[in-house]
Amino acid sequence: MNQTTDDKNKELDNKIEKKSDSEVQPKDKPADSGNAPKAVEKTGGKFFNKAFKKRRPGGGKYGKGEKDEFEQKIIHIARVTRVMKGGKRMRFRACVAVGNKTGKIGIGLAKSADVTAAITKAADQAKKKIVNVQIIKGTIAHNLNHKFGAARIMLKPAKQGTGIIAGGALRIILELAGIKNIVGKILGTNNPVNNVKCVVEALSNLKHIDIPSNKAPATSPASGAGKQDTSNELQKNNEPQNNIKK
Image (cartoon, rainbow, N blue to C red; front, side):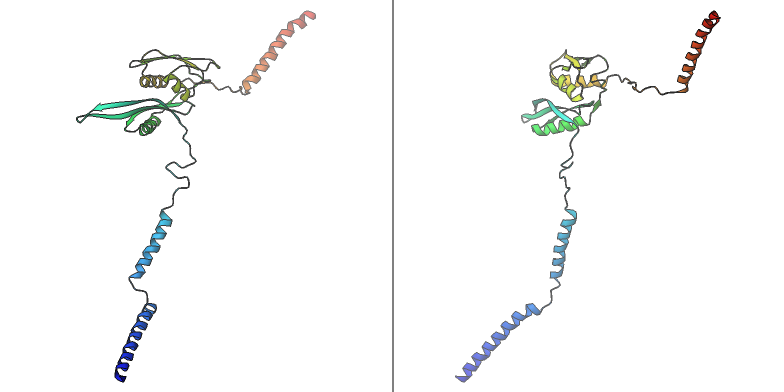
């Protein structure tokens, strides 16, 4: 009996020692070499995110606060189809006019499967084809009669207070260009795309006129000489009168 109890006690002691060794080993063991690079990778990842993943304060491509100088208006939207081998392919065509109301105007024509995409493409195309228009006292310099395909337009300058007397696509272009007093008439086709192209081409053909500056004439020695001449003339006119009195 004593032997059996002694054997049992020894077994229990061995189990307790094994448990104590297993509990002490992870605390006393130094950090494994495999754990070090993982910690470095984690810190490196955090550092990379902080350093290189900073976004612009404004956000977006052009920033939040920046505004586009051009104002855009839709001239015409149409659904167009193309006959293919398997059937018809439907798309949307947009004609957009762009201007800053200070003499710059442009038009764009683009197609896309979506209406919004077609409008954005047309606006980008219009900004690449800007035409400068000379505006003199709110109107154009001279009369214009222009023809583009089946489109034919007439433009005449007007005095202040007249406003824009025009209709359809012609009026939109004149407003975006910044012309305040003008008379216009569409004489040809009613197709808005052709009329818009005709107007922009006509405005690009305007003759450039040099406007003289309204500065006051500067005082020069020539002006002093003129004064001396006038004084001499007065003396000459007075001399015969004095001789007559004598």
